[in-house]
Image (spheres, rainbow, N blue to C red):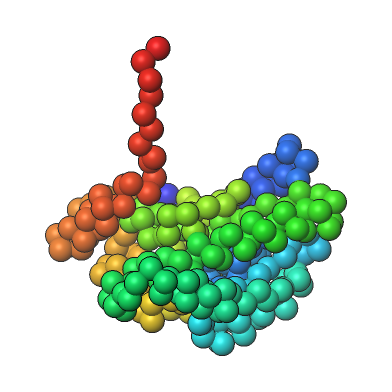
Length: 253
């Protein structure tokens, strides 16, 4: 079935509005990275709730300045408030505290360092959501910006960017997110930007070893991708299954 961006956009907006109405909610807080996913989600939230009820947050942490500039392109276009909450010193304080435990090599710390940043960012977003709930006297939710391809291969940080209160694009592939972005006129510089985590210095696809299109095709039918790509996708999916389920002991009744 051909993807109808206009129809799907209206359905997502209705989904957001209904959830907010049913649960007596007020506003939305989301991290704006300067990439397509957060740009499209911001556009959807503004269309659903009005720009006065959406607050975007840039959360630099030894980040590239151009990401903040691209984030502002989105907030300027859709007219929502954009605040900057710099985590660099907080991150550096964490690293300083870590030295009290011993001297670790950069290679030993690499994965921990990469995952610390989204965890600090998510803690900050929840703090700000609670703060603005008090200031505005209405509940603010933290909005997720992960897409279906990322989620399938577990390309997210456990306890970081997988933590949120509502997920508008979690069932959309990267290509579908772009089509909705085109329909909502997300700034082209943001929408067609090469996706990366802004943390590791590599693009998403370089880190994954497969393209998002291959992941999307695999989810439709594994035979649509090469054997080597199929193997990579399956390896990621299997390796990251622990991110989806928490093993819980259940006592005998």
